[in-house]
Image: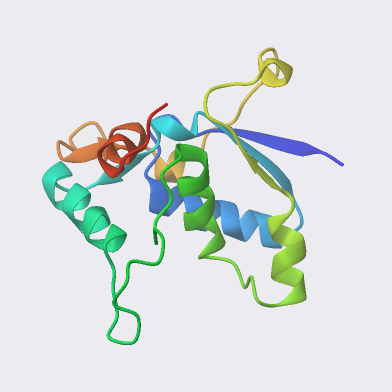
Length: 144
């Protein structure tokens, strides 16, 4: 099967994820490289606080902190966003999700292969408020 390799550098996370999810549902195999260079638009302070609030999510039934609700590794972070845009509780969605691979950086096997980018998801030059995924996960506690 043909594999599509997408470079996520300076791509807006939500837009990229929705396009990748649609392409996965049509039957493509997709590999995303440079996941840590993807961006989330908005004030960095606001974005960091929003995701930090998810770390300490508690309920009345279970007041103890029972694990983290958001991922800390950049590749898992991006994978979780894409998973949220797929029908993962149905058999088709589960099978489709298996055709997605995400890497931090560019692995050796994809060094000399031509990579594609998504023009609809590119960060516009006039956008001044954004944060890279690598910076966000460092604030969430990722050491890597």
